[in-house]
Image (cartoon, rainbow, N blue to C red; front, side, top):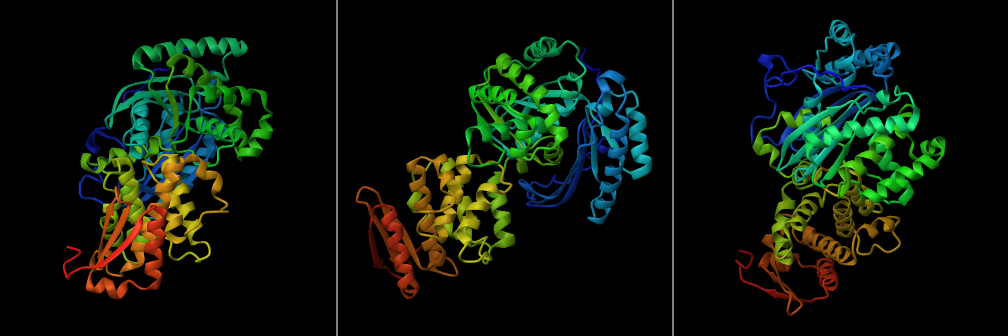
Amino acid sequence: MSEPAQASTSVSGAEDGNPFGRSLLDDPSTRALSRFGVVDVGSNSVRMVVFDGAARSPAYFYNEKLMAGLGKGLAETGCLNAEGKKRALIALKRFAVLAKGMGISPLTCVATAAVRDATDGPAFAAEVEAKTGLKLWVIDGEEEARLSAQGVLLGWPEAKGIVCDIGGNSMEMARIANGKVGKRATSPLGPFRLQQVEGGVEKRRALINRVLKKLKDKIEPENDRIYLVGGSWRVIARLDMERRNYPLTVLHEYRMTPQQALDTLDWIAESDPAVLRARTGTGVERMALVPLACEVLREVIRTFKPKEIDVSSYGIREGLLYEQMHEKLRARDPLIEAARAAEITSARLPGFGKKLYYFLLPLFKNAPPEEMRLIKAACLLHDTTWRAHPDYRAEVCFDNATRANLGGLDHPGRVFLGLALLHRYKNSRTGSRLEPLFRLLSDEEIQKAEILGKAMRFGAMFSASGPESAGKLEWFPRKRLLQLTLTPLGKDLFGEVTQARFKALAAAMHATPNVIEGAENAAA
């Protein structure tokens, strides 16, 4: 099996004929995103995604997928799967109607390996346009690699290493670093193609190794991280979570050592696929491709020798959105942008989170930058679940932080943020159903999250207009002294409940609380 020839496709501007057209996000001051819809016609699935919300960290307004199997049998017949074409066309008709109802125009549609490699690919694209009005932009393999890598950068701005995106009929690789996509390559290592290789496991392994050697020569790995993109990889990662009894089943930014991944590949090979499907809720069509994807991943690990394997839920569809962004917009922190958008739409007093952050800043003046961004995000999110029932508000906060679609946030960061928000509403975490997740943090990190939560718990109710108008916090670590200087307004606001919360904060910090009455300008 040889690597398929690739068609050259321009994607530089609408005038040249490409899916992007005029940039929707070319204004660097853009904060909010108006609905932006993309359709990805892949070898295995056909999916429509509509993004909305914060421009730099968009939410999924709508997400629908059909496992059409367009590329099934392509390596053998050279044509798209007949049943797959029918199913894909039905789905695309539906997507066109949905997009019209949502007021999305245009709907950006890209087609990848199956359509570009099939002899009847052009005819299928023409039929889609005639029957749905949707223009399929057929992109070549290296362009697919670029867009997929951009998707990783959308949710993972500091990502550095090699993006490896597996589809049904191809597998793409691209280097990323410093927010840019570098060398990239495409290969025929998709499971549908591997199904057609005769001679069993040994013949497939020999083919996989030959192809990976070519990819290695082109990509030039340096024991990088590998970022996995694609449904088959995500199933393997989900199964790794099952094997390891991992407590947080969020796939984005899930991380494995090479040895952990190899152990999971062995475990999958020895297990009943039906049992694995039941444990993870994986569909029959997807699970059928997993054993072949396992063979590829095993050889990727052996050939590229990565220092870590990370999972990205973002790929080509998110890369299409990233394509639209001005460089200054790309440079923003997706976590802070998402938190800011949540505050604007869900908090009782939008803008209070920023005031709370600056009020609490003296407590964290020596914190490293990565911790400071978590503190800022927590302050922005501290009041976004106020509509939840008071008995469950703390847990809703935690669930939102750990399971929400937040980019730029690893799993320990999610739990830290969630635990801080839990303590914003609740003094004690003892006996919580969430306790298994706390093991993703060190004892020191747990203590820091508790301090942040109790600081927000105090500051959030100190004053309705802004805590800076009521007083000023100071922290003297050598003396273990937590000092609050009250303004005249703050003296009236420093009631019994407020006093109790201030003392609880001091206790969490193992500090002595000290309250003094200052002059009119004490908070200046």
